[in-house]
Amino acid sequence: MATATARASTPRAAAAPPSPRALSRRRRARAPRRAVPARARVATTDEDASASRRPCATLRDARATSAPLADALGDGPDAVPDGPAVFALLLRGDSGDGDDDVAYVGASKRAREAIAAAARSLACSSSELRVARASLPKASRKPALRAAAAAWIAELGRVPSGNAAEDEAEAGGAGGGGGVEEGARERPTRRGRKATMADVARVVISADATKALCEDGFVVLDDVLPLEFFAAARKACEALKADGKMEALGQDGRDDLVGVLDAAALPRGGSAYGGVTPLAELLLAIPDALRARAGGSGGEDDKENGRFKGVTKKKTTAAEETRARLKTATPPPRLMLANYPGSGARYVSHLDNDPNDPGHLEGEIGSRACDRAVTAIVYMNDGWEESRGGCLRIVRRSENGGGASGAVDVAPSEGRLVLFDCRRVPHEVLPAHHTRWAMTAWIND
Ligand SMILES: O=C(O)CCC(=O)C(=O)O
Ligand SMILES: [Fe+2]
Image 1 (spheres, rainbow, N blue to C red):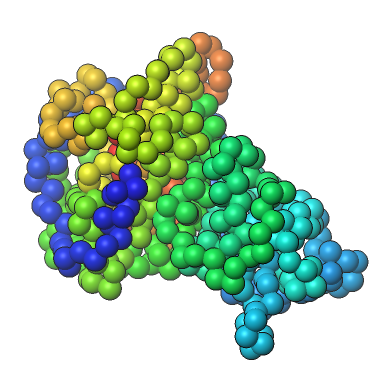
Image 2 (image 1 turned 180 degrees about the horizontal axis):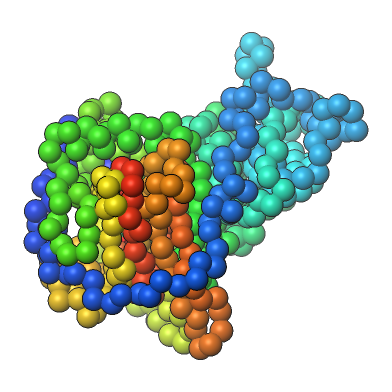
């Protein structure tokens, strides 16, 4: 996967994505067969979403009201309350121009404790540090906390040195606990390094997110990138549509227009369609992050014919089967843009990898429906509200009589990333009454 990200980030020809005709031919035959009966709605992820919407302040806003570490941890007016918060530790700049560097970004349910631990791990004098902070909703859970920290890191455009040291400590076998490593004691460098979408993916695909994906078959993650990325993507998508690059597949049961992005030739930043590229790069970085979290194979040496080899798949429960698939996750060669133009456009219930579909084995290796392990979708729709319909309805099936069952409706809200197991999770797009944009990667195994 690293190769796809690297390729995607090198300069490319200003490119219209290739025609979706090939995909169209393959998928036309794949009308979903199984109708999933409408089930009681057991939950709406909008409740989670309101608890995990973007942090109330951007990093820039929070920096404007930063306080010295001692005050943040004291009892005075600048004291940090011990609730959930996203925070940054700022290190006094050398230049004397008052421009502090961000040395660490974190988010925690117990902000005071986490700030104190992060400050200790930075191994610089605490008098050099300031704290920027934004409270998060009380009900914030770990995926939302991770997403909030990821949003600040993405806003910063680089991985702070304290976070980079923590990543290295984790990769060195310290375990994926996500806490601040006691060992990360090198003095932070002033600039850290530039953040890549691989860094963002590593933060977004937390251990908890991976666990939820395995156990429930799906996971919904919010605010995976700052909203500016989605505004730029929408603009690029509208340009693609206006230029005739989006086509209806003519497949029974689905009303979307589809465009294809070649992972190896994504539109160049700054070009008319360049706004789609950061989202595509994030989707392409997810397989690596999933594989690392699932304890899968390492680098290119583990590959045979471009696929990971030698991973034993112990299959007992659905969760174990999903985890086994994650261990060999690889990025697809192409990504799909989909636009439901409103007027009740929908996609009836189906599985993305369904052996009963006639076209299951058709197409090039890596692009066939049978190659799909995990569907990853990012939504780009600002201001989505219930009256617009267009939710992704996911059907949960209880396993051996246990586990949750029923339908979950996921609003296609801007900034949201949904992952689900392609073989386990029947889903549909409910009639959309407003234009609806999504980008999808079918991650292979
Ligand atoms: O856009 C979505 O929410 C899901 C679309 C879908 O199921 C598909 O394209 O296979
Ligand atoms: Fe689907």
